[in-house]
Image 1 (cartoon, rainbow, N blue to C red):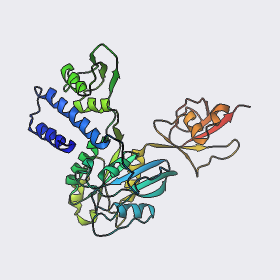
Image 2: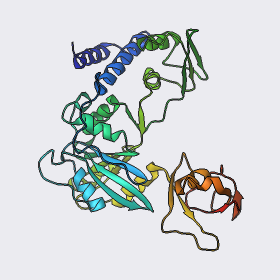
Image 3: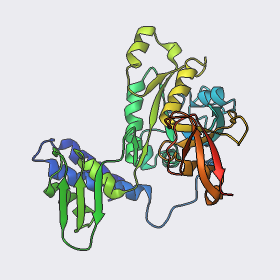
Image 4: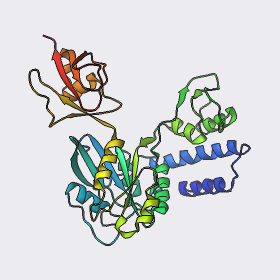
Length: 366
């Protein structure tokens, strides 16, 4: 029996099984088996084949955004009108057959856009060129799922299922679970809050599927079997996502008011360039970038070319490394103007964390 048939059998058994406390242990085991089979499907034994033509695009700029959606939802029109780069547009499906890159500048940041070929149901199982498309999506800082406003929820559910099956978690954070393998001592489970999904037997059964007899597990949240499997697998991508509802020129205002309540959603018309300002502003918020302006001694700050840092790495040391790796060897202190300090300017060390639009002057050792 092939991998796809085994996956279908397990999914059918999970659909038949009622969800309650008595079946939680059995469902946890099935989910672990399913995750292992999906991993085999993504990385088959014997090494990968040749890379898909046109899918290897060099990463440039401060962030990378991938456009994902079904064929003919307007991804190419959106890319062309946002960036000015031509991506073939036509009234038939599968016009875009390879990755089309483009770059835009927004608030001083250089952002790479990728128009990916349309995916179809079953992409995670290798149908169409879905595997290559979703593999590129894993490298993105942000995913824009472009939906046809006439059937948004139907397409949204299918695309989410495809991405989930490939190990991409949309708008989720890494589960607060500490996991450590050890050589002996069995499974040791501790939790810092009440658990409504996992108990010791379920955890043991899931780890047994991965042939892990000895491990320390600490649950710091109300974790599910899926959360534990994600942590054990260790190869999940947690990526922010915006749902772009395209073709709003084809619906009424009343219908638009209802669709606008979908979380993480921006309604637009790519053809008429409607609501691009809100889309770009939301993209900026989800990318969580920090702009830092540099100030040479005795001169005005350079507001034209900010240094772009991410919110998880935005200290003075990160700024110095972004400018040049040799700066830290001669670093003495920095003068900071902005909201991250109590008074302007303030003398700070290399561990000081900067806020958006701070101005920094670096002093070197003599």
